[in-house]
Image (cartoon, rainbow, N blue to C red; front, side, top):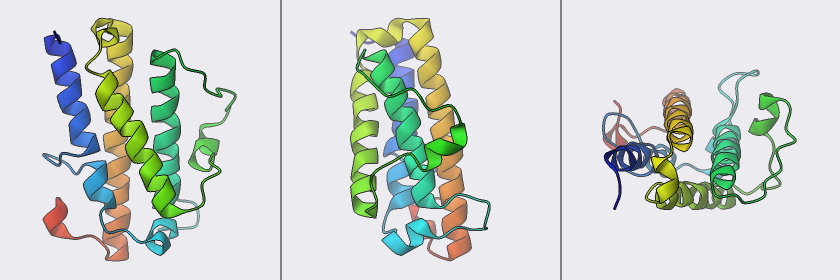
Length: 154
């Protein structure tokens, strides 16, 4: 049986994964985004949506693999590298990878590990981190004029 904390974390995670509520979920933020739009940078020194999704995959995958005791390359020493640390170059493939990683989080949040305050704290941080970067994605899409206000924020 899931604890109240686990139910809370799972619900919060869903709002960054696939249930738009107070803010836009990742699935809605990426809906109908083309490969070309995913690689456009809003400014020279700012990341593209493709790079933000790469960053989200890296940190979500790193933490879920740590929590589930699966091997993961943790040699990254500079957070900036996490925006480009991928061998995936196809937008659709990257989007699918993000969906797999986020779905794994959703599944694991229902497990016993998240009754441990250490893992629950990590989950809370990753949820906040996801929401922050999803907001960036929505802003970039607004700047591109590729955002559909019916998908969330006007």
